[in-house]
View: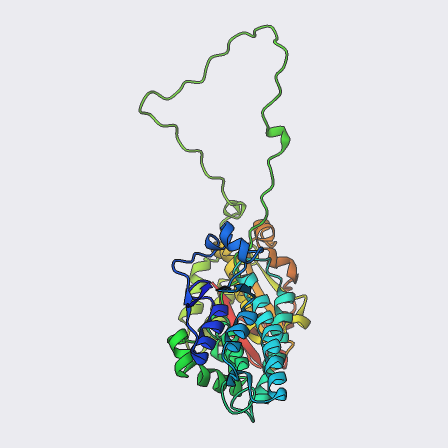
Amino acid sequence: MALILHAGKTNKNAYKTLIAAEYTGVEVELVPDFEMGVSNKTPEFLKMNPIGKVPVLETPDGPVFESNAIARYVTRLKADNPLYGSSHIDYGHIEQWIDFASLEIDANLVYWFRPRMGHVVHLPPAEEAAISALKRALGALNTHLASNTYLVGHSVTLADIVMTCNLYFGFTRLMTKSFTSEFPHVERYFWTLVHQPNFQKILGEVKQTESVPPVPSAKKPSHPKESAKAKPKDEPKKEAKKEEPATPKPEAGEEEAPKPKPKNPLDLLPPSKMILDEWKRLYSNTKTNFREVAIKGFWDMYDPEGYSLWFCDYKYDDENTVSFVTLNKVGGFLQRMDLARKYAFGKMLVIGSEPPFKVKGLWLFRGQEIPQFVLNECYDMELYDWRKVDLTDEAQKERVNQMIEDYEPFEGEPLLDAKCFK
């Protein structure tokens, strides 16, 4: 009889068993209509795996859970299976690489992935630690594969199946081409394996992800309303007061006028001669002679009474050890600043050719202070040191020019990237 595998059709941990079964000649069938979060919560499933995790293999002798254990079980159904090598040392090395694939590759991919899916809180230092550990593991794997086509011996083993399925998760969900290009032997290995017929039958066409999932928008916790706003307690009856004229109610079919939306305090400031949208258009449309056209135009438009300029420096540059994580961090900040688009213009520079990268910014805000609603709503603000630009200082004024212009080298270092908020 066929063995029954309880898992979804896109579960990479199920792929380990299905590919091993193809090489071994064992019939394994996926249970039909498996629904994660439903099928694995039934009493029947929990009898097979009390904690409800998938996959689970249903066999004539009882269930087996944990994906690597299931793949090992299926592999051992065939005596002298070449998936387990041809010697004791082959077997030891196969088990070694299975553990490496699980503990060094898969675990760090999961630590990177789960916060970006909103499953746990996203903490940039934790993410950078996971990526750093993953890169260290991929570097070790890359070194091994520089002189080996497969992990052990000269043909596919169970170690290659487990490793490739874990890499599949990384290549298709997190690791872009710019990330994996640092590990060319890993790339060669992965694409060689996924194009093997027994892999291709299970995995189908494999495409590398073009982007990393964005960090979910952080929402500030909502606070319960003050107890004073709760319904008042019943009070002893008092003498009836004289009736006051009732507020006239709208007649049938007549709606009450909606209450006016409170104005942003910045809209109540005296009019400014600087029209922010005009500056943004000039910045966007100037393609040549930027210093002579856009920078000069900025100072001609600038109203020091209606606007203020601010420098910002990221407080934790020592954490900026991974280039694309640093770029994503800045990109997330700019996304969360969208609430200030009507009142602000900004430039963010990521500086340096080697980590740790420096992050510095220049912001133009309506008014003489950083708007309070921005400080309240955008948590990134507290991650930066802010200082107001002193326009009487020619050095600071020139620094403003260079930041608007993406001048390079900036303060003696090359720019990794420059982003504009407009």
